[in-house]
Image 1: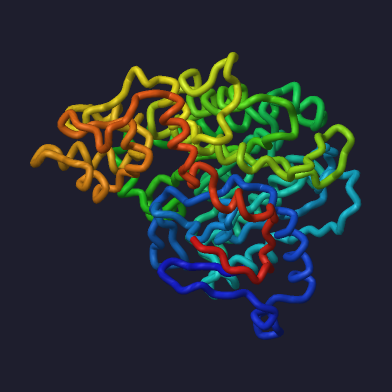
Image 2: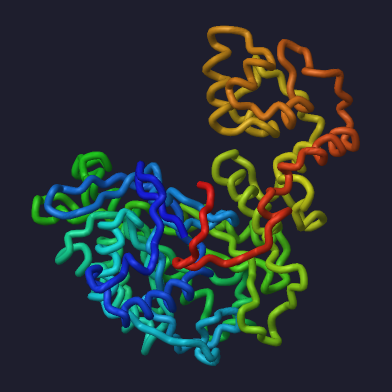
Amino acid sequence: MNFTADFQSPMKITSTDFGPASGLSSSIMEKLMILTDAAKYDVACTSSGVDRQGDGTGIGNAKSCGICHSFAADGRCISLLKILFTNECIFNCSYCQNNCNHDIPRATFTPEEICTLTIQFYRRNYIEGLFLSSGIIGSPTYTMELIYETIYKLRTFYRFQGYIHVKAIPGADPLLIEKTGFLADRMSINLELPTSSALKKLAPCKSRHTILTPMRQIQKGITENKNELISLGMSNGIVKSSMNISKGTIPRFVPAGQSTQMIIGATPENDFQIMSVAEGLYQKFGLKRVFYSAFVNVTQDSNLPALPQGPPLLREHRLYQADWLLRYYHFTVDELLSEDKPNFNIYLDPKCDWALRHLEYFPVEISTADYKTLLRVPGIGAKSAKRIVKARRGSRLDFPDLKKIGVVLKRALYFITCSGRMMYPTKIDEDYICRSLLSDSSQIPKEIREQEYRQLSLFDDVSFSS
């Protein structure tokens, strides 16, 4: 597998990188291979979303432009050191390869070993941050204590000031979660499954209440921390480091926010139910991201569905597209789906599908439509909508201008006019426009159409385009 550091060419991890001179023992390498493989099904990591410059006393920093510079063909980030603390687990969740009844090789890091790996990988420019999750060893509180010890040692003893994403353990002592939140950039708690009934069926050892309680704690901590900074006249730009306690600044609590993950396809919820849960999480818990993980049957449990066609990656893709519409395009779930139409169109992206069902709003006049109206036009994104609003102040825009701005005209041309004129004589007819849009091969991503699904390993020697 190739890793790309900030402004660096791809660098390849090979066995020669970990010889005697690397400082990594064979036992650590054995654990690394087991625990990176065990972490590959956890997708709830992405760009950092936070700026924090190093203070000169340690190594590393975090950039809001994104810690994750390389992505796999299926969209998963591969540039963090993404590992589990342990794949031992006291729980028996049907969908999890690490459940206590599953016969697999087991391994557990020590806090010192994770610190060593992080620093060694960082110094080689393989990574710029750490994503740390874990199975449950002993108890939730004991596991969270080990994670906190690891992050505390990495931040204080090793002075690592790069990006750290930590999974909080539901059911752990709230004090440990709070202390970890002042050291991590982002925290996440997996919702696991979309509904409480699904959780009860496939993970009876877990409950929605146990999961939502620390999620609420983190949200409350983020809000209180921001209010404290504001009350003291400190903006985010002034508080540069969560580690500057000795210099008199207030530490920041989970500055990059929290996220969660749902497994899609293991239980029979429809897209309307899933997106309604996601919308509620954004509104009630202020999450930065909800991640959707296409179900992979790794345990062959009889309670799980058979997947003759492989993981539902296209469905996952549509959910991410719809999630984007919720967060950046001012759509609501009720506009995209309903109880009568509970699932997304697999052939058209959600925005095109919505536009076809609401042709009464089109065509939109480019010279007069407001920003929010432009956002609803297929082929016009948030950036291009802003450029249109800015550019039309000084001159009249025509279709060649829109193409230069970044509008995808092969989609937009059916829904817009420039000075009252359409690009081509076009019928505002649902069947006609639908047939035209379906000829656009980008409606279904190439990697889903042509490539087989394959999970990633840290030790894969494969190049992926970013």
